[in-house]
Image (cartoon, rainbow, N blue to C red; front, side, top):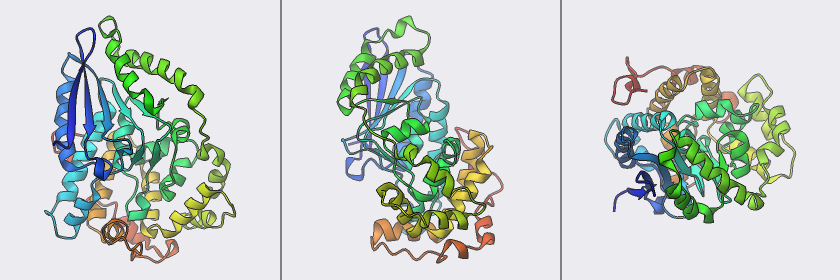
Length: 371
């Protein structure tokens, strides 16, 4: 069976809605190169097909929309088991796809129920209508594997209130539906059992009487969200701890920020999770995360993806990233041998080298679907 299922849903007035389902339930719909090769050309075709009024992007099963990218095959490539250059090809296509979703002219509705992490966050955040449910669990936990929040993370983390994006990038802390809505990572809250009703209402919507497909989708989702409000009882840990987040990130160096987080005296589970993850995450990645966010702060979306490709390819050429994958997902010993023992010991010259382009021309400027 295909790793992506495509389904055409007919509307009552003769149009079509195309559903694209990531179909890898056992791996929590981890985004693979094959998936992207199927989705990218389909979206290009749909964008110019007048019979298609909207796209629904979702994942198979109930556990996850998409739990991240296919880092196991990236690991094989980086350790010599797979084809050389796979990392560059993977990230180039992923960022092309993410950028296309961000700039797509028609509505793309992302059903972000269950786990949404890493590559899944990249897909979801570009969509015009991002839905979260009572089971949504979002995160950018790349610090735990020696990477940084890519797939546009350098864009959307920088646009969160205060320094919440920096805190979430450094700690990889999870977000629920209420967090996602407050942070601007989602647009609507619906309950899981409303999914079929959403499809039915989209089928019955008056597409032929409107020149604005986005407004049609808004009308459908607005009514559904109103009906879902009695079940929206989640509190937002990010909002609850906003003042604390602002305080611990209000320092002049990464070393000071990390120390402030580690010195938090609290019994709160969410904050203690942040303390634990930043203590066990890659010291080098922590520096890369802070530096990348600073460098991308005033960049355009195009420039952000180009900058991310430089950093991602350099991470593939370094030992930190594969070592983080090995410890967490391959050998699963939980004992990564990081390049530096602490954040204070990280060499600034090593950090700087990660931001140097490894080629004369950025592949995102020289391929189909230019970003």
